[in-house]
Image (cartoon, rainbow, N blue to C red; front, side):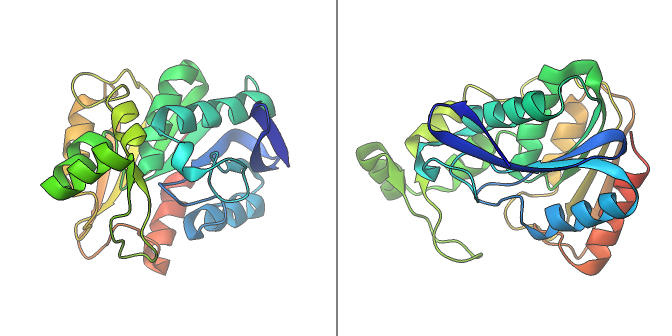
Amino acid sequence: MEVFRVAGVRLAYAFSEGAGPVVVFCSGYGSDMGGTKAMRLWEFCRARGMAMLRFDYSGHGASGGRFEDGCVGEWAADAAYVVSAVIPGREVVLVGSSMGGWIALLLALELGALVKGMVLIAPAPDFTEGLARGRLSAAQLAALRRDGVIYPPSQYGAPMPLTLKLLEDGARHLLLGGKIAVKCPVRVLHGMRDADVPWEHTLKLAACLESEDVRLVFVKDGDHRLSREADLAVLEEVVSTIG
């Protein structure tokens, strides 16, 4: 199924009706609604009669648009639009993986009391400033300013484009500089062998959240993806007991 936020740009989604708050999955940078965690939760929710919504940001997966044209603000707007178009006024549990954790937090600020809980997996709020920019060499920064895009190597496959637009837009959506007005229960899962988003990043996030109901689960031998069977079982347990 699909909706259009911007003329000509298709936003693909899948929705399964069910009881309780709708589990809304926000995927990571360059990932999509067909990823391991999204599909595992999809089957989990369907088997238990829980409502779930998964979708692709513009430039991702089955959605239209170019990845290089996107940025955090645009992708957060995509998420908000799909939620408002498909499940208007419904209570939700937001699940965000990596960059999807940042998107989920921005979405929670917009949805307010409709958010009954959040589950964040290796969340990466502010990654454009605190993680991506700081890891670029002087030569990479110069190339980024000159060309508007670079292609750093990735341990997950082909190099992913990193755009100047992404960094500049990300600076307008930073969250970790003060209190984050999220008051619902929040659960965070983070691998302590995460080479992309250090687990200490989650401690900064927890300190900024206004909610007092925040619980952190650190997986000592877990990597960034947390997609092993044992990791997915923990994710299922956490989602089933929140909201």
